[in-house]
Each structure stands twice: as C-alpha cells, then as structure tokens.
Image (cartoon, rainbow, N blue to C red):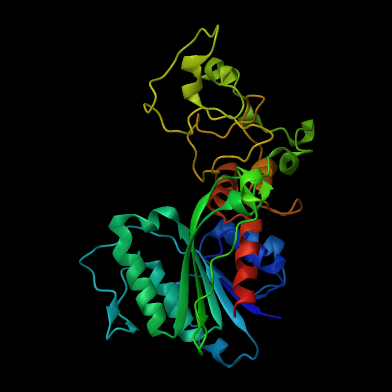
Length: 340
C-alpha cells in the first residue's frame, strides 16, 4: 500500500480521493479552523496538523519503508516577477509568505516521497504566471523528479461538473520517464470520441429534494431577480432571456454579466463550477429556480453521502467550493500510483 501525506487539505476532497484510490493517508496539514474540524469529523484516526505548513518539518518521513506520495493544492496568490525563488538551482530560499508552492516543494524535499501530485487553478497557466510554473518544474527536476503537467476538466473523468484544474505529476527519476497524462473517460461527444457521455447532476443530487433538507437560504421567490431566474431555461444563464418567446421582463446585454449569473442546472448535464464564495444571484441554481442545498453541492463535488462538514453555511460553501472533487482526486491519485 502507498502511504500518502496531504498538504493544504481543506475539507479533504483530494485526501478522500486518495483514500478511494487505495492510498493510506498518514498525515494531513491544514490551517483553517473549520476545515480542520471537518477533517477530524471524517478522518477521526488520522494525524492532522492544524498549523501553518511553514512551521512544520517533514524529514521524519524519509525513513519510512515502501512507496509514499505527497498530494496537495496550495493556495495560489499573486507572485512577484522580481522575487527570487530558487538558489543555486536546487535550493529554496527565504519565502514570500504568500508563496505556498515553495512550501509544497520544501515538504517534497524533506520527505523525499516516491512521487507527488500537485493541484491548482487553471489560471496558474496564464502567461503572467508562466515563470511560476517554469520555476516549480525546474526545482522539482533539481530535486530528482520527472514531471508531467496536465490540464484537466473534471467532467472528462466522470464528475458531474465542468471544473478546469491543473495537475502536476512528479515521480522520482531512477531511470523512469515522466508519467503520461491520464486519459479521459467521458466526453461531451461520446459517439465521436468513443467514451462515456458526460454525467448529469441529477443522480448525484437525487434524494435531497426532500423537505428535511430544506434550507431557508434556498428561497428566491421574492428576490431582486426572481422573475428572471424563473424564466431561464434549465442549462442556460441570463443571456437566454433575450431570446425567449413571450418573455416579459428584464434582459441583459451579452457579456454584461458574469457567465454564471442566473445560471440554472439541467438535470441531465454537468454543472458549471461550484464557487466557494458565490454572489446572491450567481449559479448554479436548481432547475426548479431555488438555490442549491449543502448535500447537493457536496454531491456535485462527489463527496460521499455520509461526509460531514463543520461550520456555518458560508464556511461550508467555501470548503466545498474550494475542494477537489473526490472522484477527480481518485482518478488522478490512482494514475500517479500506477506510474510510481
């Protein structure tokens, strides 16, 4: 069995995915109070460091036998192009306190795992961040790892959600080549691609329409855009209003609002990305024109049905929205393990 250390664990989406992939989680690191409480509620026997990762040491894991991996998605805040990140090509220097990517690699340097899985937002590949990715890959290579960068859409791997993320797979060299990117299993055009069709949200949300799951915050009937939301067809957003026959109400200029404004789910299609801090009229909304309930957004993120979340409603939304979908984590960690 492969031992696994989870960094920046949040609510535990990637860690749960690793567990589902057959890894044994031996340690998690998280600084947020509610997220730590959520981790403890679901992993009661796990060693969880409730601390700033910069204060922790990982050298104790060097002597462990058998394969081990490090996984995690560091928060990616702005980086200065003028800041120095590497020293003598392969050593970390004094860190910008926002630069959690360097802390991830410090843990790799100290623990010396067989492999690692790094996850982050798609905007990490924006031209303004190109130097960050190049430095990360260069330093990982200097530490002895062959790496593969892969941009993934979670819907391509059976998650009922279109969520784009960047993964970097790293394996210790020892004559090995960099692992190939994982092949998708699902497609929006399955007949053309020979893959399974995208998963719709309905079966992942099924059962939570019962009255016992009702949340006061889900009500939209008397809100500012209640009429407009009720008029949006399932699977569409605010731009559909300008083209509806017989519709009488406000319309909005295309591009005048964020694309997720008044976005409504279609039960047979994947969701748009679940946001960590959605505005009051930011979707996805249920196809019955109400806001989604906690177990519904957790289901779209493929958390197990019995997974527990700790904190107030805003905190829980943030934890779930920031998480890696468990199924996506499972696919990516299993792929890493297969190429150690």
